[in-house]
Image (cartoon, rainbow, N blue to C red):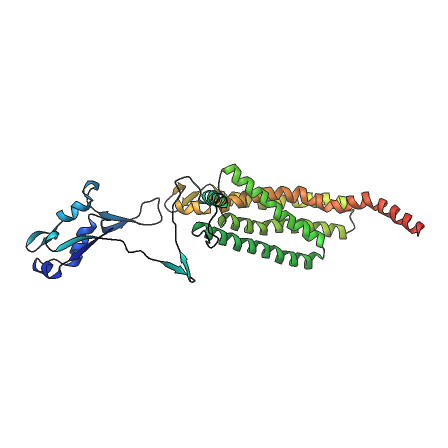
Length: 341
């Protein structure tokens, strides 16, 4: 049941009371009367300051004991307010012509909503529901899925555009493959960084970090491969050109990586530096928003540097080694077929 308070306006007028004063008095028993707002130093949103009765006095009997301060003195609200219990009126909600029932719940502290959703879905798979019943998970699960789908499309569209630009510039599918493979492999460093720091994978912030990391990784590999092609066009032998490329470009790549990681390290550690107030805060709410993004970029870039200086030269030498190993065999095999023909 629900409790309904009916105010006799005529009787309340005789005592100099009104609906607003009655409502404020009732709020002292329920949610409290808002008298102001306060924002703590460690919060981004303001907190309401409310005044209400102690918990022992917040019950149904307190309604009959409420008194209003009027020009005639304190008057019990029971003199002009009637309290009655009425049955709750049910509502049927429809979306697109279908009846909808919404179940809502919050997770306990320290429990991930995604884990509970997977647990519920696993339980649902073992049940036998009416085939006409359609179950949809909304809220955080729906928002996470939508954000993941958007970032996934953005990542692949970015790779596609990079591939087109690289092919037109290098005129080589293999060089493009080498550069983009470094982008894909750099995500290993991102996941390793999350495991080392014990952080969760955020679809939004970590995903943005992976996308922003791709630009730096591509730049490193473009510099490396461009230098290799210049040395080759100058007449240098292939293996020597690979070694010279790694030696010449190691310092620029390392400097770019170190300066980027050092610059983003305060964000990864959750530090907020107030230059004017000369104050350093650790774990501020505004800083926590960027920790996962900064961690993804820092660890991913460190791992991508190893890929650039080690794996990329190996991939450049791979076609040469395959040509040396399998070229004579293929020529012998082709010659035998020609003699048989």
